[in-house]
Length: 150
Image (cartoon, rainbow, N blue to C red; front, top):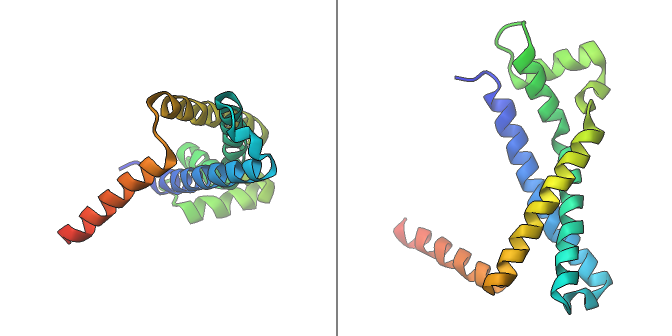
């Protein structure tokens, strides 16, 4: 199996979790500061775009060390390195800052991509008339059906 799989899984879980949490919290904060942004669809979509950019950049900052280790482990000629071994070797060779190489460009890239994803998500949600309450009800049905089958 792929030797960098633990690093990849760690990075993906961290990135995905922070992405959604940061997006929701950023939207809440923006709407709390300017409740009138809820009034028009286009301002609501602008909030999604801004919150998505913020969440993408923050996710990059948080997951960058795991991504750097993943790259290091994949390129390493030192055998089958694990996450911990790769991290320690990177820090020995380049210091703590080696875990954050390329962070600026990754923040710009992820911020742009994630902003676009959340914008499209909200565009289609608005187009089909799906609200947050609708999604919560679907989630509750899935969870309750899981509990009933256990």
